[in-house]
Length: 317
Image (cartoon, rainbow, N blue to C red; front, side):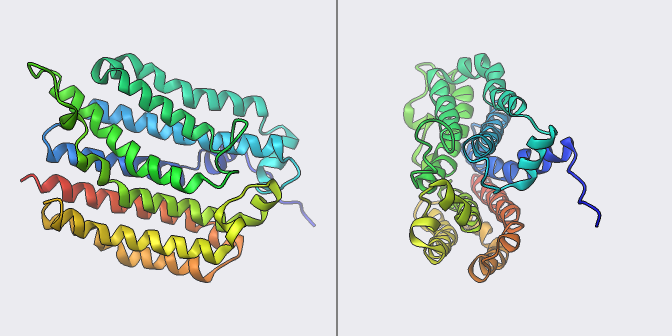
């Protein structure tokens, strides 16, 4: 019987490590919300926003690379991703190559550092430090927070608050720098910049929950105390549904409570898509059934963010 062909080096790096169908949408979603609010507040600055997105994506990819590196180093006999294990064994993939890729992902954003530092000052360094720490410490370091069962709240915080607020901040700092006495903190970081990304953070966290349900057997072997490992798949499914419901209710608060126009309800157009994804998560348990759901949930978060950004932006006119 013929042996299955090995994946090429290109396929290994793009489809298994870079994983653009997952990493690009989740990195772009909060940035788009920050851009939409900047349009609403007339502080749009394209270059800082673009550089912020590139940095966000590279940090995210660096975290994915670190996760796989730690899997191969710390748990070589846990065939969670057998294609990577086989590629390492036959030389298609090397640990040294992964280390260099991780360094590149965390180091390349530094090229834009002088410009962003000039635009946004020292807080930009803080944002970069938080981004690198959150990405690396997911699976790396002496106390990876995924192992401690803290990944879900940290994902919610990073994608729902930090990324959106950071995107808004660098734009506002650039546009408002010419004010006679400098911009006030409320202008650089208004309340809306802190809360508008919450539904996107919830949907991105749901992507993680799908992975936790799918990989719970492997996570248990690795000693990771994820929600699915500690409390079971049904608990994680309940959390998934709760976060989804939150995401589709909170736009009504944006409209009725924060004073945005009814266009902020545009994300509700993605509700049928969300129901389809939720149906798979609730009714399927096998790894091969849930694996394709991750990029679908990531794309849902992106579509939701696009519509929310549009709704927020047009509320200014």
